Amino acid sequence: MLHRRDAMIRLGQFGLGALSLPELISGELAQAKTASPSSRPKAKSCIFLFLWGGPPQQDMWDMKPDAPAGIRSIFRPIRTVVPGIDVCDQMPLLAQVTDKVAFIRSMSHPSNIHEASVYHTLTGKQNPTLISPRNFRRRTDFPNFGSVISFFHPAGAMPACVTIPRPVGHDGITYAGTYAGFLGPRFDPMELRAAPNSNDQPTHALSLPEGVDATRLVARRGLVDLLESQDRLLQHNRSTEALDGSYEQAFRMVANPAAKRAFKLDLEPPAVRDRYGRNEYGESFLLARRLVEAGVRLASVIWMYFMPNGRIANVWDTHGGTAGLGSISGFAMLKERYCIPPLEQAYSALLQDLAERGMLDETLVVMVGEFGRTPKINAAQGREHWGMCYTGLLAGGGVRGGQIYGSSDKLAAYPKDTPVAPEDLLATIYHALGLSPDSEVRDRENRPVRITDGKPVLALFS
Image (cartoon, rainbow, N blue to C red; front, side, top):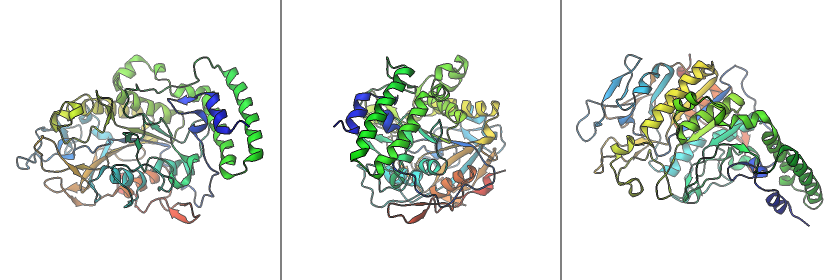
């Protein structure tokens, strides 16, 4: 008998990049929901911009110009459109949109390790069992916050959660904390498979394989239905039952013209694409806007860079001296085409575009790394990992722009007041989306577990 896996392989690859259609949203039966979103109207969607590697707060948005040499940035602060809020002189475009942004300068957690900090940032949980650097994601993991959102807001023609252009990962490892964990594959984000150690070009189109039109897709669906009905006679288990709904959802997406249009950046006017930047970062930010506009609840953009040697670099990890990047200094890295220049162009364009379209009030935009950088500048003119104090940026979704929440000490080394942990940030995102942070899901042993132990930062909201 032809097994399901063989059938799917022979059907070919549908969907985004190397992701096969049945894998797109595969999974288990939905678990009983123990809470529902709060009734108060909040943001309809969230764009999460993850600066993987950890941007230096002292060199970007919490500068300390009076700090001593060896700590003080070589960049200088500049005034912005909001009196009292300064940013780095490398970010003049950001300076023009600070009236839309709330800066949390007191983000803090205890880890200086990438893997543990990524997990904490994306799940709101600390996991002492992670083995660095080989921390493959597992179904025992606590779910990524996007998967929690998917759990409480089931997908329709569009998925509830999309990760672009790739999940966090390198050297064959996709990091723990980047998918649904114990909630099961039904609630995994729609994502490209990680493509480390290759020179793959960004692929954003949701399209059928070459030579397969809609008629042939329908015919293939009939074939799959037949194969699946035969297979179910021999395989009566939970995963088999769940596949039905997952395949149905994937089929709706690839056959739905509106869903397909959301992924087609060439439908945007050339001036808009130029405004965001004709690079993977600008296109990812623009795609995120198109996705939430089409009904996606959470669009996550993961910042990474393929080095000339084909390997992935988390380029906000600005120690300096990285061989694959030419062994340049940490400060030089920040000025390169993979750090500050494309970030401020795409970020400022995103906020202005959302505002012009009347979408900013209903779209929460969150930008953060997994940690910050040390006050002390190292020998390579860069900074080391530092989780004890860093900065997160929020805009839209009911957040009052033009404000600073919390503060750091004179070296931006520790919070001076009102520390905000990753779980508090996730609680704030849930709150903005109308989901109570007290909501519960059930783990693999069917035990109720709160989606976060954090508290939302209510002072951020108007």
